[in-house]
Image (cartoon, rainbow, N blue to C red):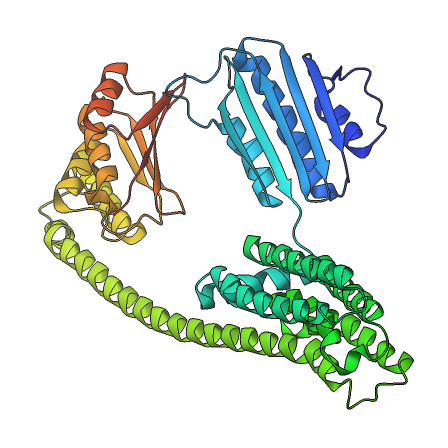
Length: 495
């Protein structure tokens, strides 16, 4: 490791580290690993800003002016860690505005992410930032085909079910041929090598989707292995069992062909097929009919495996479309029912609370110049707005509580997008506890996150410590953080 001051941009990663860490008034130690810098400019800008904000937080909150920045750049992406040995995160620490606005959101916008955790071992904080390069078009296609195939066939175990019997059968044929071969020991070694190659291919298929580069590598290896086996067997091998190496070597391709799209099949088939065709041309003792078995062993099993995998993926796609249509129909029906219920509740509220008041105004019983009447008009308008923005959020008790809070000079804002009925779950109970404990004139903002799970409540001015202590006892899942301006509460709220 070396201080950032004397770092020379010998690589793109070192240049990025210098730009991201200099001029902040901190003593920053930088460790750079640049294996393959392939980072788009937009990602560099977002990552630079994120690193600088993380280091500013060290100076503001950590109680130290020293930090360590580790930068690792590879062909797969960019990862950065900012570590300090300061006071660390408090027990009630929550994500602040700076971290969210200047670190997390810019990185998420370019496909990256961030996480903050206590440093381990010892005191301090670790901020980990990352961006992963998107897969190339061909690799993305292969990954999608692999995932669909595994989902349609019950997982990667199907590859083992197919591979092991075929491996044993081909090994038996190879060992039988070794007994009559010109070089028995060498032939047995070929059998062992091909069996090991099949197991390696099986492991690759079980571990994840192949890449285009690996498909080319396997196709080329199979062509070379088949050719080496034919050279070892000598002239005339294509006409009998001595050509076992061609079919055995193609077994890894059978496993791969099952999980790849048909358009990638030539990458697997053409190289070994070319090897057999060249061997036929060079062996005058074997004609096309005699070499048909070897040609068939090279092409047919691989093509059949690809056809089976393609058929399974097509069936899954058709099933997904049907399932999507059913889900869409149910969603449309649920939406229509929800809108009907929300509309009915809004009409009921209007009939019970708003229309009687309007009749009293129209009859002259209420004077609109009366401040109390104007206050009542504002409260009724807020209730109607609540129904329009967040239908079915309020039950009658919560509505009365909110109206009383507003009547006392407080403000309650529920952001649009809250789920129907969330006011009756844990989040609603926390809101009730706040409204009954806050002083007049406070402002409460309720915001359900887009994921439908996290809920954030902001209180201005900050809530009293004794109220927060009571909330933690009543609602153990709530975390709270206060500063000089506001209190922010977070909780998970699931149906």
